[in-house]
Image (cartoon, rainbow, N blue to C red; front, side, top):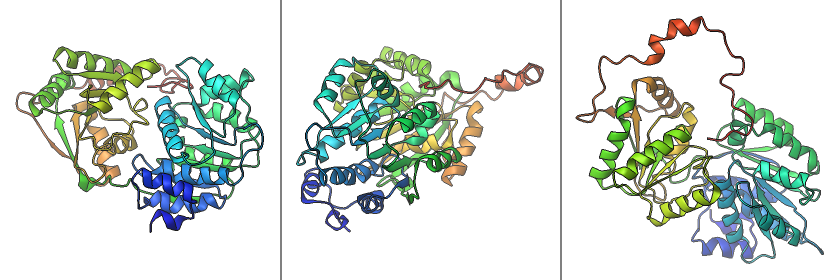
Length: 409
């Protein structure tokens, strides 16, 4: 199977060839023909599957077959959870529409809205947006969605995790009911299935595993270490290993900032990205990481969405994610395009249950050992265990543990 067999028009095939692609990935092979037929699609596809081209190519073809007359109105709306992912998709739309008479733009928060509004007023066919900025501009009556006939929700699971369900409901109430819907998610969770029932109409279900991102291509290992020694250990590993282009994941923004500062003090060229960083700071950090000016990028899970480094050699879990699927997302950023990759996790005693859940999900045991000089204290007792009896007698806060709507890590 090659792209010529998928029913794509010559202009799109030319753009695909210019990007160096010959053979479609499984998600592209399955999704493109269905989308070209106008079907609603529910797709399970993680980072690295080629899902962006899987919906972008047929979307562009459907728009080009029915060109705009007069002023261009938004006919395709692509929603994403983060600014970085929105920008990445926009780049792909631009590349694939090079030989088409299609206009597109991207809007997201954290930057001045004036240039975005100016572009919208010129007329666009395809709009890539984050939910918050989209609704802001709709409320200001500078953006109209009455002509949308194709809707894409990319990384829908992340949108729900980030508390965007209410925003999605508002958007669904604004756009026309008669439309084609494409929903892409890393998992088919209960929440995603409920969302699909609300939005999709007799959808075709498509599942795909990450292309060129297999367990065989990624060396997964872990080190036992007390959490107060993690920063020293990771700095030692990077310096002594001469590592560069290292993507490090933390669970919190505060943790990302602290680790980044410690690395810089150790003469490691590091930068941090998370939800509290300005868009210009995030863009600068990402471009520096891609060019090699930044050796280590410290990121929270959500901030790293949309980051695409084809030959990323090292991914380090400074802290294990409490959601096992996030581990798969993280390590899927290395070992691509046939290259070998390494996924290293630093595991404290508090995280042993997270490790067990991850191993259960991936169906493999992760090799775990210690580094000389960083062995865990055998007498250490996690704080949660020493305080358990007191916790039992505390009154419960019914809102504790639930993220605020639209919160970002």
